Image 1 (cartoon, rainbow, N blue to C red):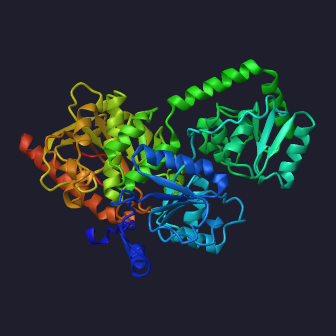
Image 2 (image 1 turned 90 degrees about the vertical axis):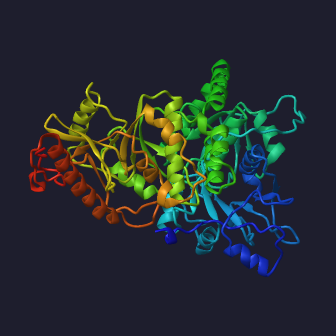
Image 3 (image 1 turned 45 degrees about the horizontal axis):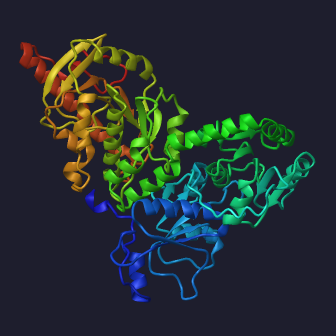
Length: 570
């Protein structure tokens, strides 16, 4: 298995030059933003994406990584340094080593050419602001391991106010390309009611001067079924502007904007006119609305920074400790029932959401060039958050868990057993994938006609409950130890033989066979034999435990643990 693990990175070679050195860059293994020498990360962008470029530059600056924003290929060619290319389809020639920031909407095929897909395939990694887009590109053959979800968020904006106009002759601003039919329909009607400024091909300080003087900014889709134009919206919110926008086809991805933006139905011109009128006629309410938005920006987790620093952790450009101090500790857990999930693996999310989720909420896991390290970091992170939130326990499943038809009823009974006064446990395991041969049975109980076992070994993370006394054990897991034979999170916990691990017979949950492992890149069917072996071994150990307790003899056939239909006879 170890030989199958491949690093995903390009190595920045300090002092590299043209020719052979460039070929070596393509074959290298690491995307290093902190190489020795006077190296600056280059952010190549179009001017209309300058807000994103500045957000990246500011985020890099916070971790002492220098960057340089450029708008075109230099006359002497690109520097041999890491590049982040925003809207790569806009540049005829791309650098040798780059991360592509994909900003187009896949609801329209305007830019989705074979050449564009090649530019994404050739990138070290691909950022995308939309899960809808990521789903499309993975269906087109781009591996989810190359994709990184990178939503847009607020960013500090500084600009030089010229104050050339004491009182602008407009109240409402639209900025962007006004040249298509549906936008013209909106703008024509808005002009009948308001003093409106249309800003096209305006960027940077000039744009911000216009927005600074606007009372309301309107966001109108270019496409009928458009995704939300989050760059424009977050840019305006960062300037503390009141925004009225059409709803989008991906509203479920933007719940944090529901209270910050005044949304009207797609295509509802009259609705937009009414909402703009409301804000212009109610200055006091607009002031309060803008103040509330400012507080939300200060208090809420910045999604852009969270996911950008998640990428820097994955590429080992910052440590997990850096991540925690920068953004990690600001993540708010709204529930103690989490489903560990990588947002980039949209197929797994869709599969999980097709059934009853039983109250579990997705938690965006961390990533690493060694996927099993990213998995363990995710558990370390969740335990740190659970401890910070002072949860007495936390339940975590993974997105390939299989909930059996009777899960709800069985789960309720198991929780009653675990909360009973006579039960002493640290972790409850919903399924044992590879029970250790030396595992000891510490107790075997029957409760509500179900068999329960307490053992001293844990070897599965598919569905577990962790009590608070186990948090620190996971928190001290060492991410610098890259021996996957001993330090995967489940093997790490398996070594802690003082744990009291509760499980049930039959197991509460299963492991979906039709999904691929995001850690080891093989089909989950390879776990079947391991789980069957664990069932048989556990059954044998219960027999031996019962014999040692009272001398009675129980045969394996008397207790078909593998069955989800028959009850255990223990």
